[in-house]
Picture 1: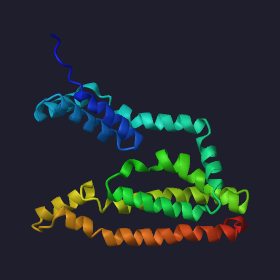
Picture 2: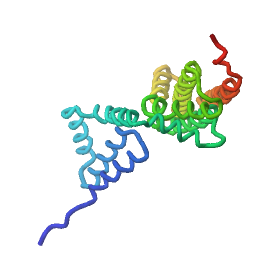
Picture 3: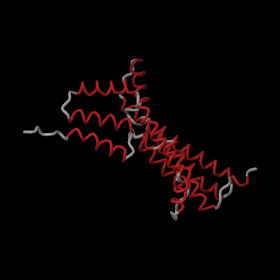
Picture 4: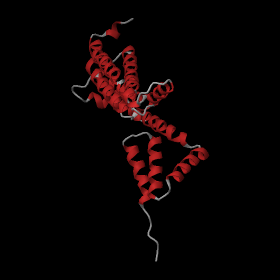
Length: 232
């Protein structure tokens, strides 16, 4: 009589598919898939950690996970991703560059606050999608953009990503900077919980959201007034 085959370790494959579909951190997805596969195969947790460590040390292929998404994005850009993003956003009646950047700022800050820092980024989101969409929305409202207007929109798109990430991740309790502050204060005899440090980052994050949100919304008025078209 044949032994029953254990299919539970295949759960790891499902974790990889779901993780990549929701654009989660590839390193986190692969690690989680490995742990779930090991647990489903009834391996001791210590053996799972040992296997992950040995795999990382011996194969040295982990960098491929980080480089592969960039190669895919480059291929998509070569086949018209940026142009298609601009055309897509110009089809919305009430879309504007300022509103688009404000919505991205809110989404970026909220996702970073939850620890999902890889949902955006300059090579993955700003260059191939956000900046072309902002240019497409502005071009629809104000006609062909000058080079100065294009450069300013690209700079504002990059700044929006930076502001959302920087101030959002400061209120994520497991963020490295929060843990560093906790360790430093504890070493100096100041007892403070990481949760309290993260909570005290909330006022700064809200101020950053409000101030930069106003800046990007004011961008529409500056474009309407032709500020960068009048510049020498």
